[in-house]
Image (cartoon, rainbow, N blue to C red; front, top):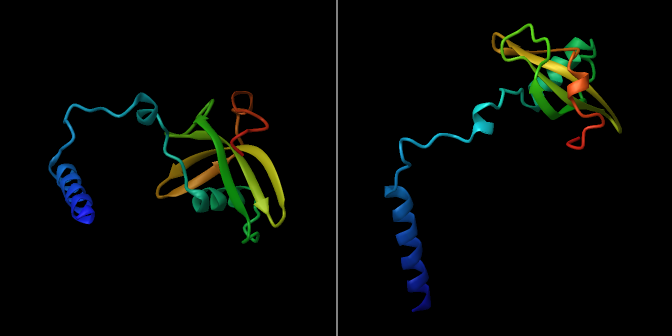
Length: 123
């Protein structure tokens, strides 16, 4: 009998979530609305390695830390991020700007160093 009560409760809860709709006037929090688009790990790594002319480093991985709108941005949606490049057992922290060029991400040296934390606690 106790299983039938639990099962009934689960059915009731799932029915409520399927029939309940979100209010149309709900807006996302301001911090989500102002969040810039960012490359994923693979895209960021590829863009950074191309900029540094290190494409042969296939085992490298770039981790994004703190990201902000880029200072002195020359491209729409350009963001500046602290990054940690891991190659083998070694890791190096620096900053880079990222922007989209067509369907590809491009990295470049950042002019936002004074605005980004170093070292970055997120990394």
